[in-house]
Length: 599
Image 1 (cartoon, rainbow, N blue to C red):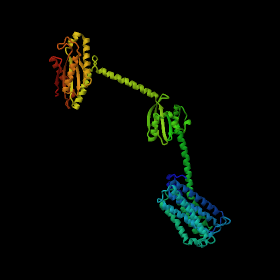
Image 2: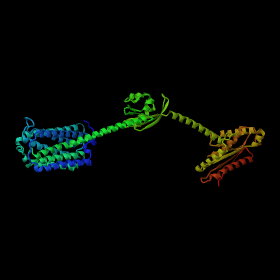
Image 3: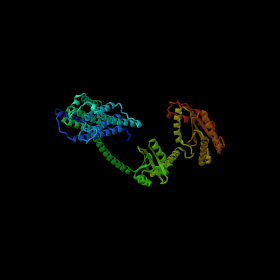
Image 4: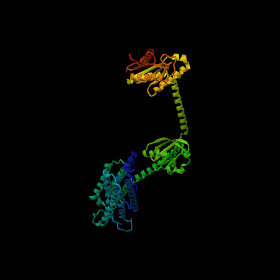
């Protein structure tokens, strides 16, 4: 027997529908009307139907024992201990009818129980007293003893209740038969009116009525089991009522009472069979829907353009679609149920293995691109966790990867071309240093930095002394070479600084010095003058030296935070140019400095 605890499958947890409540009520009303209707003639004698008692008792025996077994299954399924008591109650009624049947004449030829009316009545009393007591015990334990024990204790609990019920029946039967002569006389020639008029009859009737009332009070017949258990208990109560009222065997009331006992034994059993049949129908329909769903799913998976395969938690193949079969070159039927890594051992030291293990462990999807060296293909792989293992989708993206590589190469070439174009647009074509356009752009940018960070900005303006005479004396080609040599020498001398060397126009150059204060700017200007002198380019037409020299003007500005940059940048250029003019007027080949005061 399974030890699964599933409260959903228990009839106790199936709530009743309106239709079920109406059906149960109509059934109860029907047997009540019949029972009340025959009461005026309940004592009417009817001939003895010899086959009635064996047939009735056989059905009650089957019905009660089968109900007891099904309730025991419900107990094992739901783990509700009260159901074990209810199962024992129906087992009690099923077993007690056996010795009760044997007390009737013409059932067996001879034996211990044969033709014992007194024993028969007392066994009937025990039968009809034991069942309501079982119902009362079941109802009392509802909500008080629901949790089931496990293991050895559960076994001994079941054994104690079942064996105890059998032992109680055995002891009662033995006592009734053994001490029959000492028990109060309750029946004489089929007349048991003494039972009705003694204290035993009313107590028996009251206990059965109490079972009906208490069961309804505690359960309100809200669950399917309690609804039909209520009908069973009520029919049992009517059985007792009519039996006591009829006061003699083989009377009309006695026969109808026996039919009520038949209804009592059948009510719960019938609803069990009915629900089992419904469950079976739902199971068949669910199975059909599942098969249709699987077929539909297989069609969907088979139509997926991606290659797809699935493995369980033991890494065994559970599915592979046609695209995957086509790529790996093997059919699913050959690998079904086989270990994935055994079939694909070449993947053990690749990203496949690492990523698949991560997904199986962390239950989080992973995506990656992998190059299949054996087939020379790029694969885009997606791995997802599933309830049973992992699902793997992969597609051939070789064409895309090749296209992306070509596009990347083209972009790199384009970026290089753009950089070259930018360099050409910002570079002086003759000297190779930055041009006037680049100077204007960088002056605006560094002016903003100076204003924002409150740091100084310096500018050097210099030109070659007597350059026109140089051109007239040596020619324009030599003049171009002189300009180029001076530009390269100054640029190289300031290469490890933040200085930006530009050709400003003609033989005039501008050097932007970000973050350079007065002292630094004057030092850079001296470096420029010495660098030109050190070139020792002959200049016979110069009035200051036998070699090419330069005059240098320097200006430094501290840009206030609230300065209008567009109108004030020209003052830095103007002051540098003024310092250059002063250097020329003072004899050339020298450095002159001036501060810039912004308005």
